[in-house]
Length: 243
Image (cartoon, rainbow, N blue to C red; front, side, top):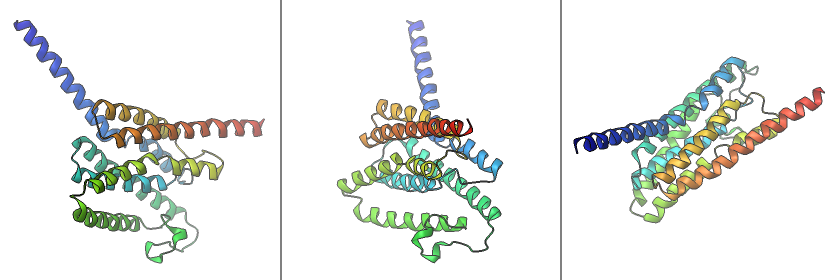
């Protein structure tokens, strides 16, 4: 009987460690794909291959998710993941602004205060991105406080959050199409996106997370695969031209 108790405790301990590992991977795993892209931009001093609108999509998605958590307290792990992702996107934007300002030939600065839609999310100063996110957060906070008791509003907020997150890869997909190339984009980043999306979609299903989350994950996987197909297509085109 004692042996059975010890075995049961060991099994429970193993599951606890596994659960802790999975939770840690959920919190920090989303930031890992941006490490190779960060290094690629640092190495090449060129940001043209990376779409900063990926940062826009993820910032909006994760700010909305935080307010969704206030209205519907799902796993705390996912709340922490949003905080880590927001900080990661700010780090990417700061690097892109630094590199672009270093390489800029013209002295003309594009600012948020110019109110020119043509330059939206193409600003020269990192502070403008912070200011935009602060304003967006204040608006979301005000609306959420007013409508927090509405189940429809809270569920809509969650749907919007995951809808934006599902579109994560779309700006990069369009950027590659516009450039007619995937040069400057880290393929490792997209491979890690794919692995992460498969992992988190499985995590959502196993943990009975709100349906919005696993639907979002499934859409993301499809977009990741599309970007990887672009890598194959454009690299094939390059070989054909060289041949």
